[in-house]
Length: 361
Image (cartoon, rainbow, N blue to C red; front, side, top):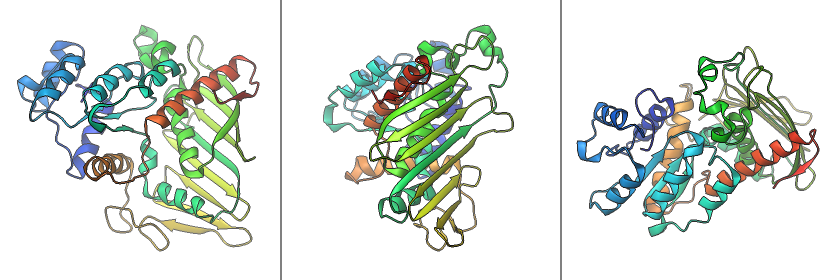
């Protein structure tokens, strides 16, 4: 693991996800760029002293030459610190699991995409919500034509934790509030990329252009905290995306609706084990995870809820299958990471030009 030392939320989540299906063992890490934190964090996690690093470059070199070196590395650093370690480990022939967004800029993302991985090393981008069983079922239903021709896609991701200025922002220590470190945007980079990826993953539509209205409602905030974006997809379908971190009353509210000329789908993160499917002129159907009509992807029996950690673990489990057998799994890739950066860049360009329509760069 790179990053994810003491007190780091995403490191904690990745470690749980990696353990859940028994495919991974944490044996080495550069858990912080601060040597004292790297050492204390590694020891707290039970790592051997000679496999606790404070420099990811040294870790990539050392682990790639050990007979028992790591097969996979999880990168859970802030956004602007994803590319350098990802490049180092891919070039060392070590598989990479990386948080989103992919990079601090589109140029960095494209540079990473140009790297030729050694020994066929693979890359996974952790867009968590693609791991939910009913999100994958929705994707399958769209692909096989259950909804007919897709006309509209509505996606939203709303939070309220940045409704007021945070102490970190006041102290100037919050990397999410620094456009040079966050990936160029605020809400659009942090959660807007999740919403965009979710819409693309399920609908299968390719974005043509967008019109973005981004706001920073909190005085002095240097990145957006609310985004309203209209989407035009290739083929004529239309969409709308709302991403907000100042929507009071929303802790982590995600909703995706897809409308075709025959039927529609509605999935909400607050009820992830239910998918609403409605054919035109008929009563709504509620499809449950592992229930009748589902894809049977769940780990546990019907009626037992699965949530965020299990969805995250599904990505890890699928990636293990890809590494071991070359299996084809619906996982977010490096190309999806580059597209996410293209989406952010296009949205920022549109917003800076009074929400003028902007082709996907």
